[in-house]
Image 1 (cartoon, one colour):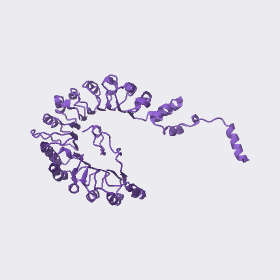
Image 2 (tube, helix red, strand yellow):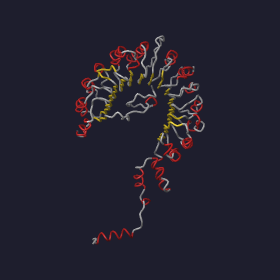
Image 3 (cartoon, rainbow, N blue to C red):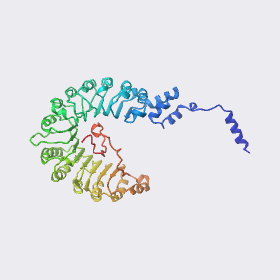
Image 4 (tube, rainbow, N blue to C red):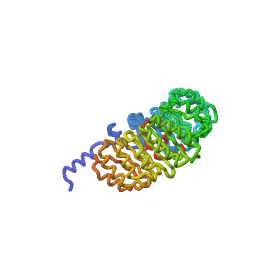
Length: 465
């Protein structure tokens, strides 16, 4: 027999009016809605006007970034997302790998306040007239593998505030519109736009250009470009892909304000490549302005050449915050080169790929004297073991910040994670990852980025190379 108290409560419950989710206040609904993805929330808000109102006020209006991925064309109501979020979105990113873009039309209609547009692997020229209104307020346009023609220039010229432009991997462009943008663009990426360098337009763009601060470029015709690049005296960031330098040219560009340099290579070069490139690096070493340096060893043709750079030039850089040393097979970068570096007080991020000459002893000796080191990425450094982490634990425990370590194909084991978890939280100043699929420390495409932060680039970026 049920107790009297329990029986009364059951009777009261039965007599009370039926309750529903609509009786919850807005705070409760907001908490519930926070568990839904945007795609699901679009479906939920169709239940009633109140759900729509709460979703719009507390979610759609605050959502400044909208990403459309490949899978969205089948399972996500892009039209609903565009209608609800479009007026509030300032950043739109599209990665669809698709030629049928009809399902994207609502974006061009509703995204009327865009400032940053990124489109990759999507042929947009058939839709560009429909998109004309979204260009007017753009500050940044990243258009990669979009099948662009020079017609795109007419729309880019309608954006008076445009300062960052990436045309990467659009080989049909000649750049006839670039001279008209020279007084507003601060950043430009023309990697894999080889037609641009077969015309005089890029030279006109560079001439007397005091605005440009960041340039990403692949150099297949260096002889004709040297004089043009030498005009860009205000560059602070330079990315050179496959710099096929021709020693017949005596022009070595001087960039007195350069703080960020990346020398990327996907092929091996002949000995002729070394001369001007070495002189260029030597000039920068004497200036000692670099804070970010990436060297793909493939840009040098021989072990002797790259070793000369490490021994004679690298020690000249005392202000480096980021150093990336990369080789697709076997790097020459060794403990002795770490020992010669003079940037211990400034270095924040260190990336070493494919070095069999870096050991626990040499790397620890360097890191213990680097008080500001925050990121360490080691890929295929076969002589790095658990011993490095063990030595770093007490050193990092004394520092105010955490050291993030990503070890990919080294001899560091997963047991290190368990040992770190056993430490007291205040002593656990190392965040360790040992996973070849871990790729979240960087922008997927750093050459398209205008960020000032120093982030890891844990891939070779086949689009760049």
